[in-house]
Image (cartoon, rainbow, N blue to C red; front, side, top):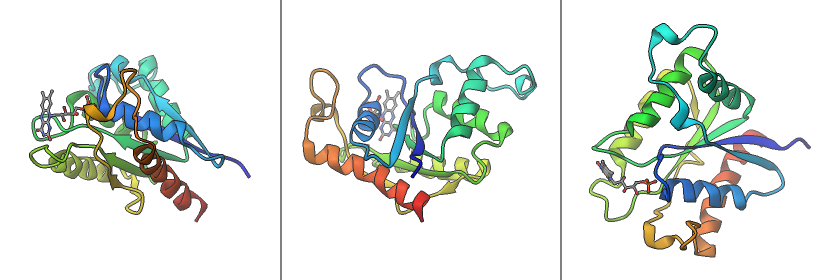
Length: 182
Ligand code: FNR
């Protein structure tokens, strides 16, 4: 059987990001039925401007769109900044609207916000749900999960330390793959 390609998109550009560490644990724990790939081009995207949403597209936008287009599903992990989505990540999402690659595509997220976070990242994830609705994505509710990953959960090399936590994170990918199988 062909493997499910799943694009992993991190909403943080920070070196040592807990969101990226969570996605790397997802990738490393993937079973043989999935082919997860971490998208690394968010920082190269230009500021979204509808005037620039024409051919020839900026190469970073073309890369984003083809990566989404080639994926069977997208898995997002983003922090909350100032009660909403990080600007760089909202910028990425805005670039997906015009291309239509998100339309009908199964998407899930992992909310790794610390239990100590004021709202547990709820505002960012409410916003994410709304934006994905505008982009026409199919939100896979059975795969969306809250799995706190904090800086003390990471080893010095930035990887998620606990095998139990890594297994929980990997389980999200399995839930997303279940939707693709089903
Ligand atoms: C934050 N953080 C944060 N957390 C939250 O729950 N609600 C919020 O409104 C904010 N606002 C906010 C603004 C700014 C400028 C920063 C730098 C941070 C905390 C933030 O979500 C947390 O540190 C995440 O762990 C950052 O994710 P990465 O970079 O570790 O992936």
